[in-house]
Image (cartoon, rainbow, N blue to C red; front, side, top):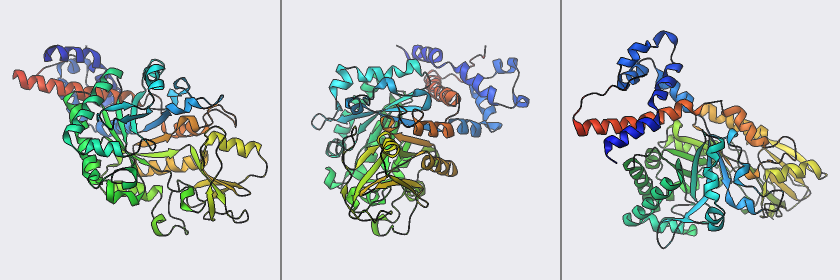
Amino acid sequence: MSQAGALASARSLLSLREVLRVIVAKLPQAVVPSRRSLSEMTLQGVFLTVLAVGLVGNVRDARATRLICHYTTWSQGRADPYSYRVEHVPGDLCTHVVYNFLGVDSEEFELAYLQREIDIVQNGLGRFIDLRQRFPDLKLYFAVGGWDHGGAAFSSMASKRSRRQKFVASVVKFMTKFAFDGIELVWLYPGSVERGGSNYDKDNFVYLVDDLKTAFLKARKPWDVTIQVPADHTRFEVGYDQPNLCASADYVHVAGYDLRGSWAGFADVHSPMQNRPHDTGIYQGLNVQDGVESWLRNGCSTEKVVLGVPFLGRTFLLRNSQQNSIGAASAGPGPKGQHTYTEGYLGYFEICQKLKSERNWRTAWDSIGQCPYAYRGTQWIGYEDERSLREKVAFVKRKELRGIYAFSLDLDDYKGKCGEPYPLMTTLASMLKTPKESEIGSALDRWELAQQMEEDRLNATGASQTAWSWS
């Protein structure tokens, strides 16, 4: 197809008239031009008018909130009734949903299916994309990496330009085929030798993000490059060039959880908001507030930063049942959950049922860390609930961050065994998600793509101006 033909198709598909209608609807009546004057104005002129009346600030506000839900493919393998499938995803509670996980082929250096049986044979990817049929405004990402994937394949792939290019080409092909809106890189962790990393990962991670961005621009696709990064300051120096990552990535997802666990040797909530008196040594500054502040202080604009919150709890076995406050000595991880089946880890749906149906559980509140915890005998759980999530949303709003991501949907009480279904996700949505909030943002994204294509066409033809009519 010729460039002119592609532009004509883009005009139809991108519906720029929609952009104008949305923009004009947001303007005060006094500054809205007449229908005739709009028909005589170029799109460039209309956009300059928008700038003149300060609409950009309104557009930014309308686009600001992202409420990103994570869907995990492995959760469908749990025993009934907690086999969580794509069809359970509450798309009306999310602005974006992320498919977890794909990986990096350690030999071919291309995008790889980690669970081919689910992804392809059971059409997991296709069913995921079909969420758009029920939720047309929903944006769909896929994540690459994760804890079980490790860092070695990332490190090897990113170490050479030719390997990065091969990976990037496979990503572009994949995204074109399945019509995803963005990719999230979950490299855990660059520069970490114990995770298969090297001393060169810090620079190579930036190169990888840059290569993806360049390829997406070349493909003329408004795809997002998102990176998941830690709030853990102990990992910054060896693996994260914060200023350059902030400049290159579209969004930076700060994981505000797993900051404590059974590996620490003491019981604690794993997503504390700020320092407590017992936080000393490496644990001083190891909290949500300081982690986010580090990324903001080192180059990230607030518009790019999204805070990650957990729907999971970290569990411990206490050394002494009579010493059960935060910071109490622990002997190891708590027992496996009936459905999550991992030591030291429980989903919120398991936690709330324990507290509801099992005797002698006592709950308490970390007034500084702003998180709940519960204990019974030698069992101890640090977790999130509706109250603690409200505190994190309040923090996000105070800092004017771009939004929140929740990991993960299958760990919420989505069956409603303890009350209403999806209590945690509903709490977030009630505070962050507004009806039709994506309308102007989506229209503006389409405007930007079409505007770039039009500018390229004008440069190629030497034309000075093209007026696209309003009617």
